[in-house]
Length: 600
Image (tube, rainbow, N blue to C red; front, side, top):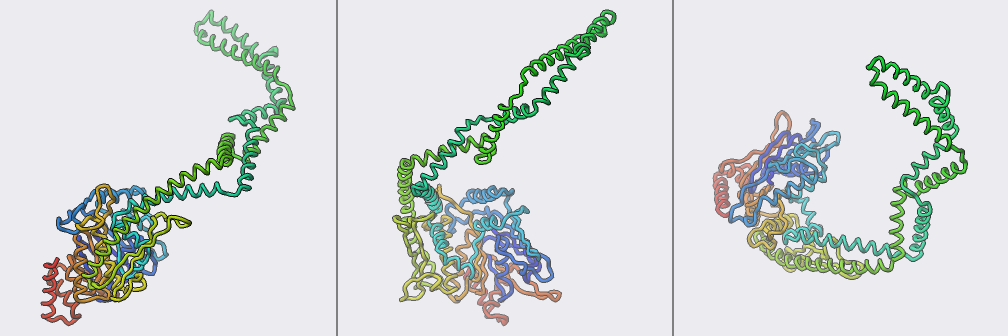
């Protein structure tokens, strides 16, 4: 994916600015305070960065940042540092997986549009292809799309976790780290279960007594599924026996027993209908239905007679039913809302009792499983550690070579390892047994020390550039990269690299070397760079000039794409000498452009 377009509205001093980026090295230059770094900040907002209504342009009710990313299907040059192994399909699959994971449409589209809206009320929302998403989801996406490196981002390099990530990326060890994490999780689960079995004996016996009582209480009840419904029906009948008896008796009398009962009247009606049928055949269809109705009423009458004979008041049975229902209700309040749930709880209690009563056997089994899991974790963690140490030696050499090209040739760069013990309380973690610390010594005669204690801002910028160049080549399969992927290893989407003021604290030939490194990094991916140095700007594939203007009494920031060599030479001349540009300076700028084109 490549950042194709950035559209900013009402953000700080920017009123309405659209800038279209290309593949390769995109460079932003301009006077100090013109708004170059604001463009970088805007990209961060679109990718889920923190937002504040204070950044909204005065007089506007909202700020909007839209970043358009497009798939870069263009093949890398065969001689580029990332040329080998470059495959678009794995990257597409990785990107599509993000859309599927977050339930969004558009994963197969060639274009992805990220939009961030910040309202003056403080409300903010993020959209991906016009679908609302969370900031966390967009930040997960951002890790695939963009890597931003500025003065603030250097702090991240001080983190041991970030340094370990960098080493693992270089060596292509992400799958091995995932495997270690799985084994660590399995071992931790077994340790927790083992710990629960090792609770004190008194507590175990108390738990057994409680569970045994609960099991016996449920078992003694001898519950049957559906029993409560049947008992409720029986209770309703026994509690209303007199009403039922009276109703059944009345119905039997009206249907059968009285002189003018329904059955007697139907018999008379049947005889009359039989007489009529002799004279008129149209009555024939009604003869059988009438006979059937008479039969039905006679059957019902007989049922009522037998039913009345069975009805007997039985206060003891009613009390038994009520007691049984009360028992079931009490068990429901304690163990489940239905008989099915009570019986399921009984099953769980029996299993728990089985474990507690046979804890010694279970403990022995768990101990064996834990030993196997620990041995497997230790083996994989040690293998991962060995791979990391081998990769560390390679990255140390490669980074030192890169630093030598950017004016830090006497710098010592080391990766210091601390190994977590595989015995005792500390037994490694989810990322293995290694803790690393990047150390440098920029001055001869000094011992290498942690980055935050030694490196200046400019040195950190150059170190970050060196690391990203080395790791980038390894990640995307360039020649000589220590971490080139094999067929089965994970590939990542080539991100856009953004360097904000990578030139801090450098100049001259060192700046020229930094420019060459940026150009090299940009051969097979997109790089955006903010700089004040012409020695870097001359290597740009695409040059944008950012400036502040006054329009209608308001300050605005605009960006102009420098298309011609003449425009680029004039901007380099401005960067070289300021506002006073002579023919000699222009000639020197043109020479720099020509030499930069030939040196890459």
